[in-house]
Image (cartoon, rainbow, N blue to C red):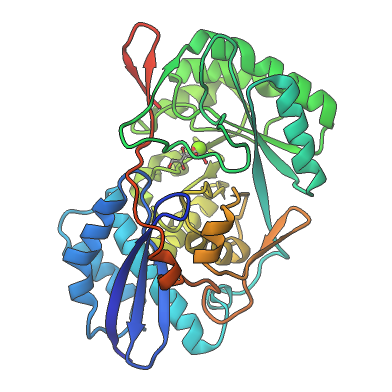
Length: 402
Ligand code: CS2
Ligand code: MG
């Protein structure tokens, strides 16, 4: 079998997505997500100019060799653009291998380790009263885990609190929206929110919170300590993670579990965090961490150090990424949680898929391959629209982390 074509599909059914579709001489096709929020066309161009020409004529069965060829062959290793492009190829090749074998991809990864994939939803609201109603809504839908983000009094906008509660989309303008941040107000407010949520919903519901990289290690340590009575499942991205040793300081002070890694692209981005047991969950996922092949390497390393998976699953990860992530999630020994933000109906139509939600769990497709596709004709009806992620400033105008 040989690869005869590889098409880069850019579409915007409510938000932008980049998808690679690989075609073979035997008519078997595979898809891979290549979406990098706010930088979509950089990956599309990387694929079109530098990857697609190398794929034509290759044997699609050689997944590992193709991965190494694209990774080592670029010379310029790592980075979100390169790794998203490699991920798209890798994911599409696993899809093809599954179809050729007549098996869902999770069977090729060792088969099921669990009945289903526990997911968390997003309860977002401007006020504590509203967010309690949102948490109740997720609990009613059967969710066993909920991420809670709430507006901070005195701040016009807060990360995670969108205009539409079901489809939080931070990339909302061609030129980045500017938001304003105040750490003191935030640190003062958040523990009182979790006190309310925990007392209303009891000890069983898993609660999570995303700091979105906005604190320093000592501030994060203070927040982690303040949240200990409310037994969070994780505190996410408490600090920017370029300085991996910075997490030691957080660790010395608090038992609140830490989740990090949605912006990581390779095992090297979390090697120290994992081997020094500085985190509890690693949030890498298929599209931004080099595909199924590399993601499994990260999770295998994590397994040795009691670190569990907690893959990113915001709406900018397409249904193709979600389909692939579920095959990994259901098969690995150290699965923790999977983020699940629902896509819009338009997105679901462009990417027909057969994973399904029931009782707080997602179930991967049982079809051969990944069980997801891209409807290229429909995709063409939604042209790309430039959309950037926001930026964040302190009240005195200094640039801060978003
Ligand atoms: C996030 C995302 O889901 C999350 O945890 O941090 O909303 C993130 O900001 C976007 O996916 C960025 O593309
Ligand atoms: Mg996050």
